[in-house]
Length: 284
Image (tube, rainbow, N blue to C red):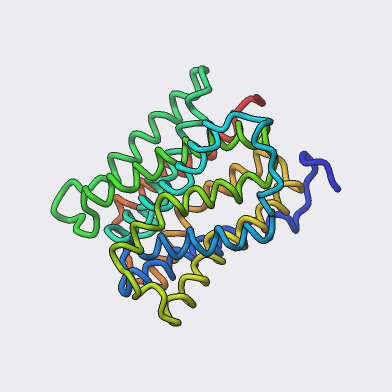
């Protein structure tokens, strides 16, 4: 296996495929909203992802005595919550806007641990991006405050997921993601089951739900694991920064979610902040 700081050009393509898979999953999810709502789609994604990861990682072999179980519960809660609130945001606002706003979560984690003057430039760009993405003015009629709030809450839980994911990853290893997905499914899947009932279990819904879970969770997770071992951390961070733009393009192409110039400017500010924070980050 190559050292994680080595560079393999093919790994970039693999990572970009993961990004394309995630955004394709978001498109399918928005189509699924028309049939079972955001809550039902969340149940499908978490439920199928939990089953897939259960088979792959066999979490029953985990020795929970080795680590902090409280951290694991928070990790599972965060995993479920960030999926639930992101889908609630997707129902209200365009994909690109939702991804851009949610992206402030992991970016905030990176900036929180920085104390150098240059980092205030990235913080200022994030704030500028948020202001430009807010639904202020009559011309921005494709965004509402409820969707913005849901996306920011999803970003908050994404940040919690990163923080506690590091903790439980060190304690339990990679299979803990499967156990965390099961916790997330247990906590949030019942919401969709209660609201949609037997409608979730029709053949068509189950097929779409499986596609969403594969594209949004299983496939990108596997591709990212492959890519992460062959590209430097900074390259990984820069490539991740492209997700809001890819989401916006997918929204335009597949859903007709055209954005205003001011919204593209907001996304650009957040992307530049992410790239800047990645390039100037110190190893920790």
